[in-house]
Amino acid sequence: MTVHYVTHTLKTDDITIMGNVANTARVTGKTITRIGAIEGQEQQFPPTVHVNLERLEGEPQDSITLSLSLPDAIEMGIQLVAMGIENNPRPDIDGMRDRLAQMVSDLDQTLQISH
Image (cartoon, rainbow, N blue to C red; front, side, top):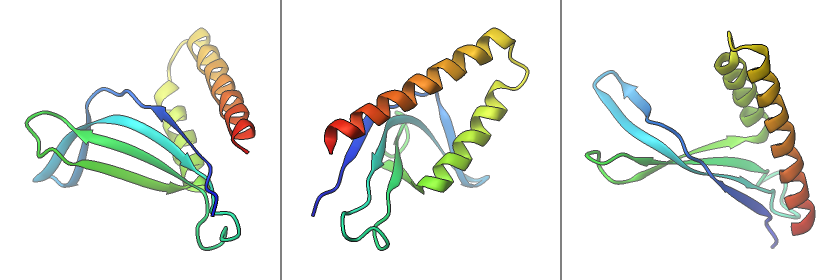
């Protein structure tokens, strides 16, 4: 059984997660991992993206993982980028577009090497 994956460090500022208003925690991004499908079992074990979050000091010290299908990761990512860059000046948007293109290229290169 072969599974290909690639992990990158994810550094974020404080993120608040909530179950409801009385149930909140502060976390930071730790890593983001793309895990490929299990060869021969792609239907049962499709590729996923895992976002690992770590609770900040003062919070119970457990980690939280957000596991997304690739289509959900893409949709959420596109929505988050669009909302995050809204009202930014054109040079900033161009810079983010260039960074995204480079990240996709780097990931593609990493996945080709791992095969």
